[in-house]
Amino acid sequence: MIVRKMSIDDTDFALSLTSGEGWSDIKSDFESLISYSPAAAFVGEEDGRRIGMISAVSYGNLGFIGSLIVVRDCRNKGHGTNLMKHAIEHLSGLGVKTLMLDAVEAAIPVYRKLGFSTVCRSLRMKGVVEARRTDNVRPMTRRDLPTVLTIDQAHFGADRSHFLKRTWSLFPEFCKTLDIGKSVQGYVMGSPGNDFIRIAPWIVNGGVHRGEDLLRELAAQSGGKALRMGVLERDTTTVELLKTLGFEEVSSSYRMIHGDSSIVGLSQGIHAIGSPAKG
Ligand SMILES: CC(C)(COP(=O)(O)OP(=O)(O)OC[C@H]1O[C@@H](n2cnc3c(N)ncnc32)[C@H](O)[C@@H]1OP(=O)(O)O)[C@@H](O)C(=O)NCCC(=O)NCCS
Image (cartoon, rainbow, N blue to C red; front, side, top):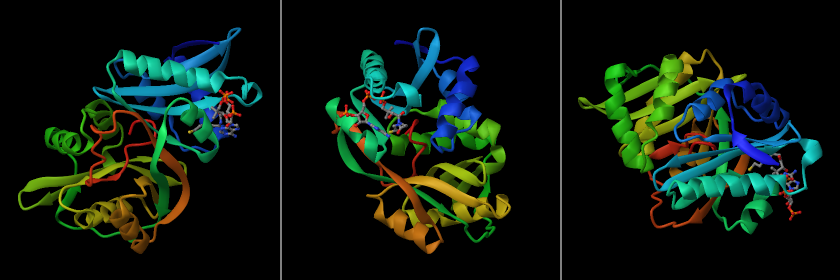
């Protein structure tokens, strides 16, 4: 198998793999990875046939691996492991010290063999939230972006402005900010899935309860559709809040880590992760 950068011509292939697994990726997810610099998505090819893919996003010291899929008739031949090795080498070469990923249970052995260990469960939660409009939540504007990016970096620990700016430019109707006093203290971004709105990320200064109105505003925007997001199980306050708002756990994976864990904040302020592939 050779591994090469994913190109725009590969997005239909990538989406055929994710939909085959029942994952909720949309075309712009792969376009974001492809347009990231340095390269963040790769395709495995054998004899000219595309047989797998993986994403590997570097944010300075921190890197996220995701979207690992091998076509069904080529599994259990070592290709998944080889794609992982490529992603790890790529990120290490860029100076990444800590790697993270969200693993489905069946794939954990693949990652353990490569040196990853489990941090906690990573939950997917979905629910139809009662809509409510409040004065302190408003559409995110271009002028808000620098503040939003600063809040995000403070919690996430790295600059992921490429992905956040793209989400805002593609789906501004699902991007909201929370004002407390006269300043922005939190934000949420969403994008349309098939029959739900995908929340990623949702970040609030000073406790998740302050961010409830962001979800209620998105519910008003979503026209009765469910909201869906990824939440780390160790964020028990958020999990409890989501349950009281009507969310249920629909599936889960395991957040795994490789390398230097001391530089990973796993901030208290990140209530919805930015996606398994992008952190
Ligand atoms: C996970 C996956 C990429 C592994 O690809 P692969 O080419 O079969 O991987 P390898 O041949 O290198 O390794 C095989 C390992 O996959 C694991 N595996 C087997 N069936 C699996 C399944 N249905 N899902 C996940 N992992 C599986 C086995 O533990 C096996 O480990 P072993 O060598 O100890 O038996 C592939 O099974 C796949 O695409 N699964 C569906 C998508 C998915 O779950 N991706 C991972 C998300 S975290």
